[in-house]
Length: 333
Image (cartoon, rainbow, N blue to C red; front, top):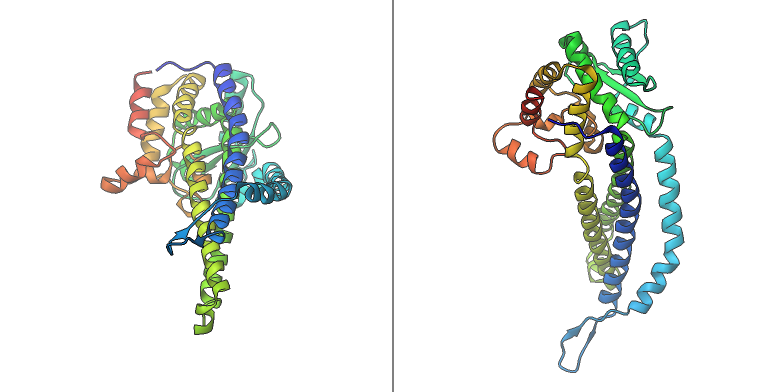
């Protein structure tokens, strides 16, 4: 398995980061325009001379309202993105329950990280630990001040030094390749779309419960109009979320193969990393995290341990490649 050059991979990820920064706002703005267009079509329907309902789209009106809302949308999303971008470390810690690991508490991990970073000339990242008996690890951060390698206590207890070195080298390669910056950007934008979907859904259910509680309300055209607007908003949100997921998947699987190859090269022992992946795949933890966007950071996604039909269905939408294939390639390194 040949490792793509570090600078080539960095260039690819930097270009993909720019693509994401452009693509996600475009998806969001397209969702808003489609929403306004559907409302215009539904609100502008009329009966023709034969009694048939005719729906028409007035693009001039739609564009007017879209351009009026554009500064507020761009400003709101921009502020939201900046807050999330610079508080990503706290976000990941909160989602996973990670805490800082001191050198005194575990000098073994610090020695391994220091030796690996010195061997490739990179800065020492922060080290966090999660008190979890299951096995997993991940890297996160967007710059030198926030780059972090996180491991579980279960991983530290089960892996020997060579295997742990392979796992940490894998995570350090994610940092070197700028994978973490790319994924954090993806997580933030998917989170924005998810939050919008949740808000629309809550408004819809509130309208259904409280807006239609009496027969008079059911006959009220305004109440029906509100429900139609909410349904349209939900459909637009689901479509937008679907496209953001597809965009995220386009950047996810290959990075793990690259990190495996880079990690094997860094630690000098691909078989140790293959052995570590085999052990982790038997009990990949952090399932309590409950956030699919954060779970894509893990060295092995918890769902990759499923079997049968669940495994097949999960693999179709997984952000990680098949672990057995990763191990096979490492053993041929």
